[in-house]
Length: 313
Image (cartoon, rainbow, N blue to C red; front, side, top):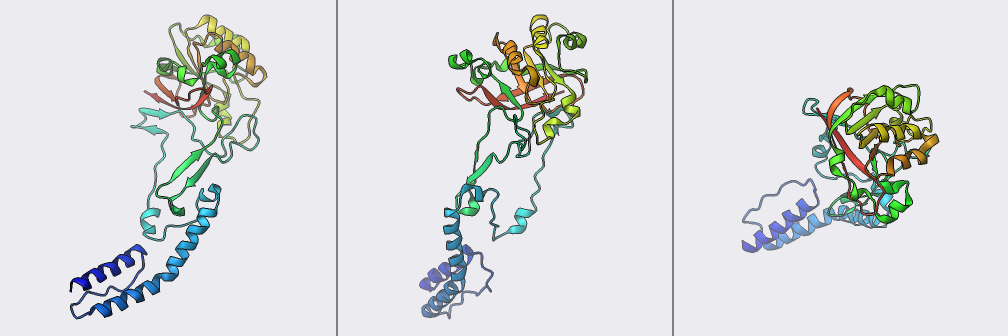
């Protein structure tokens, strides 16, 4: 009887391992050891095509590239209903509007600097459970100035880059605290005259500028648009000379207008006390005062970093 139990347990283990739908055969005392062994052989024979197919799939997946694994062409053979019934929730606001996410989702069709075809595929899945790995492990490759991101002084001033003024040196106090969301005139870039007209009070340290870029939904367009609104050099200089602003945020991939990009960035970066956050998602935000929280990755040696930014009312 003990040997029958061991053999039966082995048989049941084979059945469960291969997810086969077989008629349950109860273990009865009258089964002899010989009969049970024969039953085991028959079951093993009946599932051998599945085993062969599984081996073939494993061999095929091991020889396939990581591109083939994302998205995976394979399906889960067991408990499919449990998987397909899952419905992830993606939010823009949390806690009844108390928290607003002002970061853009990363996806292949988001705009990328000077690209007509968007960001492209930036995620791969070199380790896939469907391909036999014990876990899913993604690999990401993208420019650090992609999507909602932050600039460090070394981005446009090579002396600062060599000296190590990277994103790990940015002041988190500047990136977190009370902030003003303002609408700028829609008919021009941000010049000294535009800055004067906004009447931003002294003492305001963080300002997020919403422009025509949001109205035109440029961050939702695949093709890079050189006509985006940004600061001109004189607007940046006026901000430095006449305000207490240390965090400048804007709603496209660059704070500086395309026609004046390098010179304007250098005005902001020269003193190394102003932080630029670019590519903000401000479409569902009302103008006003919030608490902003922006946290870049601690990328040693990098002059930029993707950043997650939220507003809290």
